[in-house]
Image (cartoon, rainbow, N blue to C red; front, top):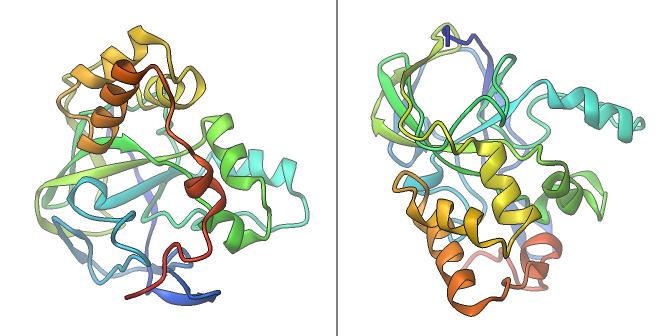
Length: 232
């Protein structure tokens, strides 16, 4: 895989979005280089650190190719990056082409694909489309997160260059299908559970399903709760 050009990078501040909720999904483009920390990019913030950000979800990548799909389905909205709250926007990398555990060099930093994004109700709050989180999940156009293996300065001028691929059989798209589309299929769950590069949250979720034979309730994540996301 040749180096992939970074189309744009974005960071955001946590803001009140009403109802006692805080979100940093509304990000702005930056042109200067930033320090990529183990916790995230520059001064990028998260609205609720209990469910967003952290070392396993330090950096969010969303393929720019997907915006053609969203413009087709919701023509009244001007879909463009960073409509999904992404930090990195590219052409040339999608969920089918990237694998869990892939290590990329970006500028001075090394990052590793840790998990797909789990769409949540903040997308519906941002765009006023109640079914959007579930639609994103069902479409497989979720994007993915990185953990930071080596901090360093990064910029839009730096290309993403694949350094290592340990799990070629587990693309981000396959992980999405196993976790969301066939959530009780044992072979897919075992593949997720056994992938050491996958985030602990996803591996533990796969293990619980294998033990219980049940899928956890997604309603809080997809639709939100009255007190969900409130700042302490």
